[in-house]
Length: 79
Picture (cartoon, rainbow, N blue to C red):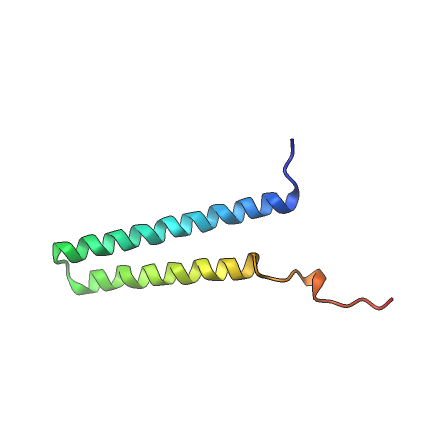
């Protein structure tokens, strides 16, 4: 059984989105661990910025894929 092209495309996108989320969660855990260990503030801040950047990246991916309007749907063809 073959997967339709559009479904296969979104399976790939979901894989990337999942990887981003796993990395974001890992950065969050690392930041908390460093904070508990009394690490230098710049290390904690770097992980917090990375976590925010990854959240932004995931949002941009969703906006550019799931919520984007394909070009074919934005043009009006004359009859």
